[in-house]
Length: 576
Image 1: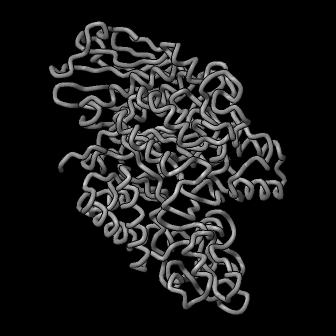
Image 2: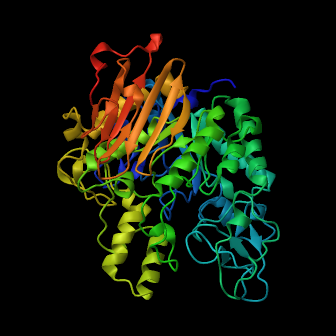
């Protein structure tokens, strides 16, 4: 398989409204991103992924697009977007945009035309159905945002389909005009210099014909029905047509698909170059939790739980194995749709630095493409949201109401939401110790955690900071051993996550402690002289063939030599 530029990419996700405010309105914008390009470049990343910046009523933070050809005034102008793309390229950074394929805003001109009646040419841009009988829904499918997937049109008798909010009607990808229209949009932005797209919710572009009910459900009840609107056969067909047409004009375009519920077989199907669809996909299936202590009457994903490390290791090993020939899987701990990594998997009270560094070491030195959420590199934790009215996610408010009805206290529910909600990951970037953490001169739209040590200015000045650890790690990530080397998971106890990366005569051992207690491990190679300690965080030691990883300890040791990438002599040490 010929190599593509994106196979060695390191992606930095910028959530624009939370990154940097340049005009003092409390909302991050494109000029703010431009101002921080030197910082982004300094991290060692190669790609910026921007969450949606197109014109939108902002029902779902920009994922409800009403004009794909213009920038929302909240973020700036199309000239700002063009300048950002041009200057990013001058810094050696590529830019990918979030592209919402599955649905639009109900304020989009296409939908406004579709509402004029069944004879309107844009009617077939969306999905419509009749009720079973007067006043009855077409079926019993539930929306991801709560309630039914059906909404009755205001001036007619049919219902339109919306998998997310009712203000976000799904597009009819079976209509060739829809396919051409979305391709035109992608081409427009590629002409502006964009290098690729993160394809939002693409796995939902096909729905089961006839909209059958989920069987064996009580009359009047609605249920999630992913088997009828996720990963159906035509998804790959639609994606292949879209991708092939775009690549005819832009052969180097990078297409990474959001495939939240995709298992490994689906991920291989979507990513296989022979299928000519996505280059890579982002699944949400990595992080299995121990659900035994959760209340089954409430959504399990909105209740805090401990990572099932045994299941996690098995999953990651399988994804490494099955996707290795395609450049490896996407590697991430968090994004705008899930809680912050160090709050979810680490220890923000006692071992925040160590656990932040351990998580980065574990994930990003595996084979694949790192996706790093802005702020992760300084150990940003979840935003502390004090009241339910400050949450924006519809599912958070639905959880709150249902948990209250079941007798849970407000304090308990808020603790759970602050631990699990995507809103908690969207706190603004912490740049310094000034008011509002240097993000803005006005109160930020989402709130801010102001902390003495967890902002860029403090960590720039500290050689041992999380930020500088990330820089070292990402520098090593770009070497052949970690881009091309094979992957092998090492059998250990359920406290450790250890693996090897091997290329030629060189092998890296990456070993990480996922607990707050010291863990010992043994390796005969530790007695050899020919090895290098490439990376280590605090509280680790090595004596003879016995290594000790402190709480949330991480160490990377390289055995053997590579004449083209020989370690510097000053790095050749035998103790942590």
